[in-house]
Amino acid sequence: MDKAIREMPKAELHRHIEGCVRTGTVLDIARRHGLKLPTFDEAELDRVYKLRSPGASLSGVLKMFELAQASFVSYEAVERITCEALEDAYKKENIRLLELRYSPDFMFRNNGLDWRKGQEIINSALVKFEKASNMVCGVIIIASRSYGMDSVLKTIDFAVDNKKTVIGFDLADNEAAYPSQLYRSAVKKLHKADIPLTVHSGEEGEYRQVEETITALFPRRIGHGVKAAEDPSGRTVELIKRAGITVETNPWSNYLTRAVASIEEHPLKKFIQAGLRCTIGADDPEILDTHLNKEYGLALEKMGLSAGDVKYTLKCAVEGSFLPADKRQQAARELSV
Ligand SMILES: [Zn+2]
Image 1: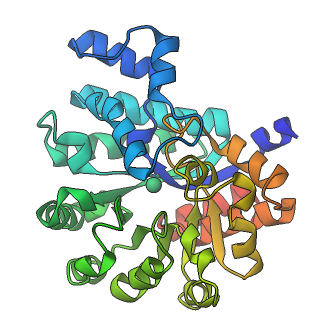
Image 2 (image 1 turned 90 degrees about the vertical axis):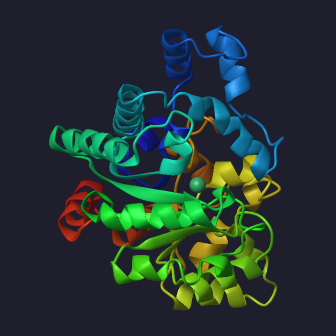
């Protein structure tokens, strides 16, 4: 089973670059740049840096990103981390369609890096990797809600100005404190520019937030969406279905942040049975100690998915991808969907 899962060509639509920094890279960059770390022993650091069991809320997990965030010290570091993320996805997980996402304000703010230059470096790493492999990839720009409205507006302008190298836009983090309706008018600029939107929604809090996200922001995809399953009337799931939205599920991430009480209770199977378009993602593979091989294994062994269901999620990923049609067609051939 393990070997078959590893070798299966895969697609990933929900992966944060900031969550892809290897422990060894955190250590190496800290040494080179004289940064402080809780420990310089790699095994010890790995224990501090990675979340292995549910023990933190979503905000607790976001705090764990500080070590990763500190690693983006220079353009060279940005390039290295991006290249390693691509390499890990391609070689370890056999991913053939990869959408990476990052928040420029989160990644670049502490070290005063220029957003445009950072984006150019990330994009050229992707272009280079694509040319040298049979994986297609693209980058989504994230606005972090908790950085305030000015940051969200700046990030939207940045995505629109860099439309040529950006495949989509995401609104992430703390939905409970910063509800979707706050961004109703801000996202109009994205829609006007034809930049597809995905929103982290229904990852925590309650199912009503998912409805609010859909009616206020008109996203093409929703990140997580697990809380939709808690609507006893089934209306929220129906709304997602009617809107043709693809749900980017991240089962292990949801388990670690206690969005679901156990991995067995993750609603992915229910969503598929209800006819929703769903994909399986790893979210933050290094920090959450996961990867798609593990996620697919859990889906098949603990979450009740059949091999046919997994194939269906791959088809949904190709169809729901923000990549241009030629790249999606290439991925469809690679994934046989
Ligand atoms: Zn995410």
